[in-house]
Length: 139
Picture 1: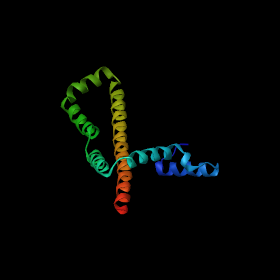
Picture 2: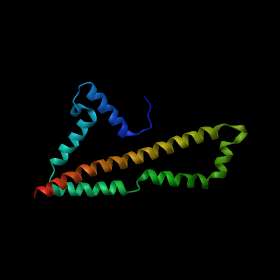
Picture 3: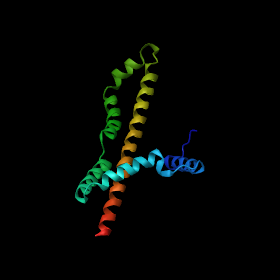
Picture 4: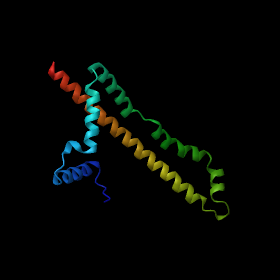
């Protein structure tokens, strides 16, 4: 079923289904992945985790190639707008529609990919932060 409520609601629905079917939550694929990531980070010492955390901050805060692509391609097209318009609209051609659809598809996909990457960086940062906090409280 198509839902626009986001991942949090999808997780809720999966949890609800698993509980009603008598399944263990720990056996769900997404939670197994989280446990594997936690296990890896727990195996590292605090200094290594701190370095990884800094790298994740860079990853989350950095602009990356996708926003550069999103902002620079329109300017590139603007520079070549006259030859591009002549090519796309020559003789009543529908190339402009194909070009526009392709460009928008690439643009939307790139933006979605960019925000998913930022979400994953935040996810890893939270796990690392929790582990470091737990270790600091134990000292």
